[in-house]
Amino acid sequence: MVHDMREEYSAPRWVLNKLETTKHEEMENICVVLWGIWYWRNKKVWNNQVINPYIVIENSLNVLREWKSVRKKVQQVNREAVGRDAEDKRWKPPEIGTFKLNVDAAYRVEDSTFSIGMVIRDHSGPGVGLDGHRHQNPNRYCVLFSSSGNKGSSV
Image (cartoon, rainbow, N blue to C red):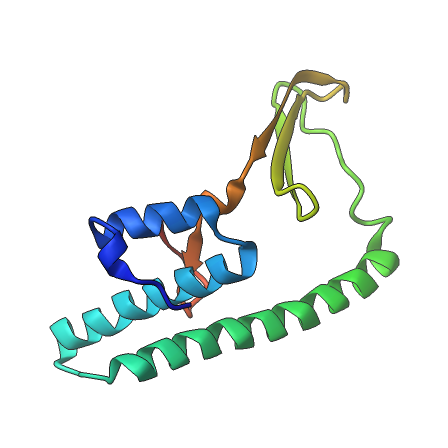
């Protein structure tokens, strides 16, 4: 992840350029390192804690590796649970006079597209409203999560 910053006008322009042109794995690394910089900057501002920048990068990348490892295990458990609970997870209509909004999204690595779809249903079941969108190059969006699991900042 080495880049000659002299070619860029500013760090924000470099980040925006990377968001448009970078492969998924490198984008994850960039996002988690940006999160680490933000995290340790706050530690400096609020607690006067200082850390070596190289350690910030390594710690950030370790957080990503750990998150991926845990996520892989959780996905395996979820796949096993879906088989057992498929009957319990069936869609149920909303109460009369109310609507239910169901949303789903998918990312295709093969062609770097991101799709999202939604359906609004009333108590009778058939969709009263449908919508769907397909987006090219979703890598320009990056959502970071804090270690507490809460949604963090977007780049």
